[in-house]
Image (cartoon, rainbow, N blue to C red):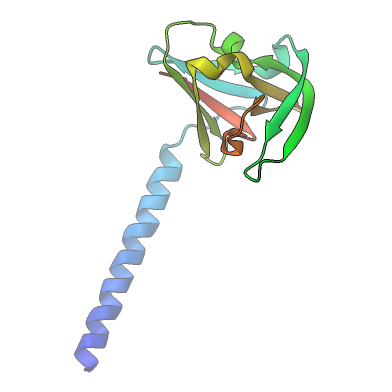
Length: 144
């Protein structure tokens, strides 16, 4: 019985060490995006987009949450299509600072905006019934 407890304890310790090592490796391998910037990955090339230099436009519209309730949204921003500036793609992944991500398909691009406030970007898809695509603190956009 004592031997079984020792084996279980050793297995738990090994698993914790492996988990800690994995987290350390993952956090160390993530590239840091500078403040006021978004990393744009297009055609396997990365470039930095300085959001403080973007030409912003006022926009407004509605989004729908998971309960079906409409919410008015307005602000200053830029269309996602203008940021990626290409028509050769099928979808775009928008990734937040905390690695949360959402996908915008080509057919949704007319309603996809990056709202810019206080040096940060937020993905908003107007008329969207999928509130999961509301991505705060956008730091990376991958064009696929």
